[in-house]
Length: 193
Image (cartoon, rainbow, N blue to C red; front, top):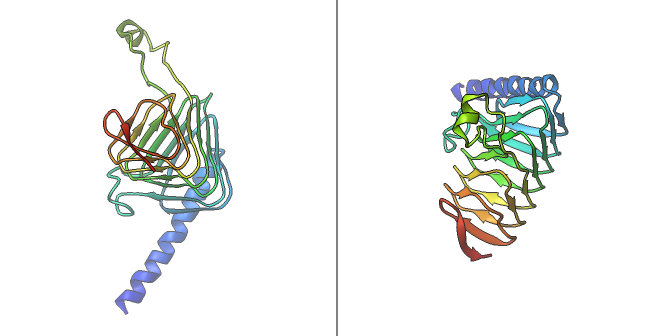
């Protein structure tokens, strides 16, 4: 009996979460096909966000405790273009797009990852004090079938080649070729796949 009641409430909660996420996408002008999100996503879109068919995500402390973050966040500024292709799975991560981020199909992004195509602030202290007018941005491209382990940080201007694997906790600061495993802070070559 108790198991049936729990299953019933999970079903109701799942439906409410679906409606919440659908509304979040509509209000923020996100182009989306089919999606499956466990939990509730946070979206702030002033630019262009497109999600391909089969987008899946875990979003929330109770949904996937591995990520540590509270939810999955997709944030796109006025000039930003965030395009996530088909069959991409993301868990409790934050993607901030001020320029352009393209994530190709069949990519998996582990819990607690950060993907930022901006420095957020100028490296010049005078500029920071006067309104941060010279903030650097540079596009990010993650090719097909890449696996990014939990708690990785992917910084601006990086391209990750297809089928490559980024070890958990890595900080990616430069391009990674296809079919390789990289890890560390900063990430370095480990071996070919």
